[in-house]
Length: 94
Image 1 (cartoon, rainbow, N blue to C red):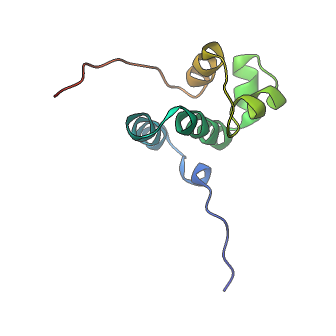
Image 2: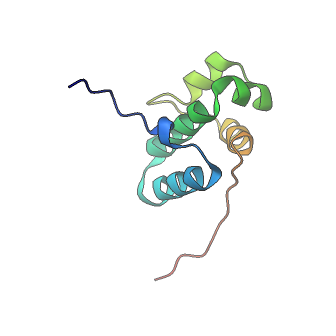
């Protein structure tokens, strides 16, 4: 039996799945997890499309969204907008 490597990007095929995935990572993950998740989403949508919508080059996107990267906040905001997301602040409940 042949197996293939799991790639979350293969399952991020609609806006609801993308939002659920990113919200889960935002809730449970750290900075690097969030950046990596945004990279997975960009890959699922298509880096070329994201590059066109953000005005960034594909190599710049890959570098900004790679493991261990520390992209500027402006870059993250551009990519979030391109993937159809937004940041919303809700009060924490105790």
